Length: 357
Image (tube, rainbow, N blue to C red; front, side):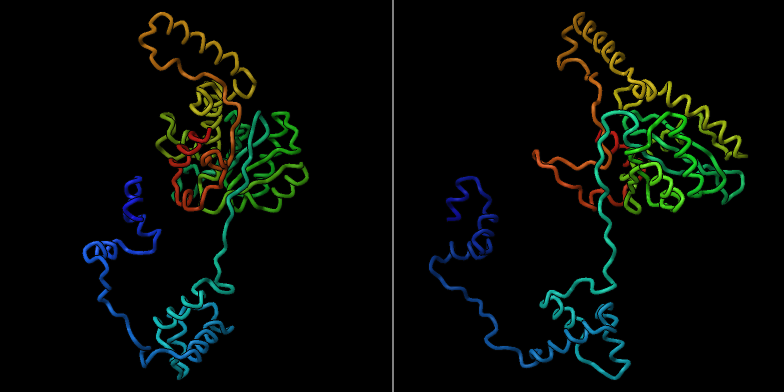
């Protein structure tokens, strides 16, 4: 059977695994056809093996109310301090493994954080992200705080403020201001943020509920759950104009941000939206801009067709942008696992955001 499988292209080790034998066993059979194995296992039970009653005692002890939140490494010394010894740590672990009890028990079970829901934006003012980042001040250990809201579909900065403190009240004011200044109906708008205190403060959540906004939150310490905001912060702090020295006052920080937002919204060709400006895309002007670019490329290809072996660059507008998307697996949509996303840096978040766009 193994020989036939190998002829059909299967790996020998995999064929043996399917049959439930090892490759060494197969080699021994091939070397000694019809021979019997010379290995002999234990013929009897060890005299010092635990009895069923002793095993039951171990299980009862580790599941007792006072010990169920502790590992055997804690239980054994505590029992010894009380003048009792029922088993070693390794024996306890072995018995727990046999009984399928080698898991977190009772209140020691760690909290699990689910991946946030996926949201899809097909136009402006459907899904926003917001976050807070530090701006250095001249006083070591003290910072100014930049509050910033971005539309994930157009990448346009919808609102920003710089303050000397972090608070839910200031965040609430920013959301109200962003909706009012941009003429946005907040009902049904998704606003995503991380898990910081200002993001989950009662004042902000109450304001969102009053406005009909749908809040969305990242998992703790997972920057890619809020990749759009993290990528924007990286763009901001890696600008050549970003001051090398700390800001001397809130007013100075606000002045610099005012200039940055004007450049970012109206001059910056964003790589995630076919290199149009966020303001152009937000206003619906990108269709004409990209169509003109496509004509320029087609004319250039007609002049020198040999230089365009793979066709012209894709200048079609991006119709959909997803927040915390599911990944595709052969046409089947499956959630990303935690270990694919945890522990990533802000730079990884920017790269990931560009890929999913």
